[in-house]
Length: 144
Image (cartoon, rainbow, N blue to C red; front, side, top):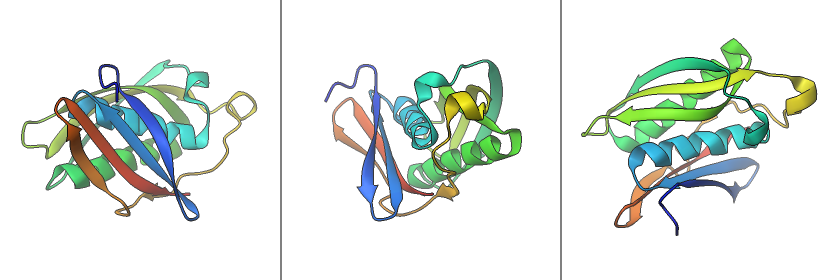
């Protein structure tokens, strides 16, 4: 697994979709999970990072922090009618607080062709772990 830049992927889960992000640090893994979230809706490469939105969430541990992070993005997408493609995060050392900036643009239905609406992140298959030294992965299933 090449963890120097990070990557995202989907995994199958009955009627819903799993999102997974991996990278050399926890921030990159969470950012890649966010890209995977956008990819459930549209091609992230079609989303231009024109407008910045600040997001801050807290949770009792890193697994719940992932759910709070993805739910905050889903909320911002719905309220602002935006999609996001670039993310910068800072997670505190005890993995209970996240500050982020998400860049994106308003939804252009013709260009983005949104496939589904994501309703929320779930606790299903929720996991944040280090499969190897210097590699972090973060995943959960999102309700579509």
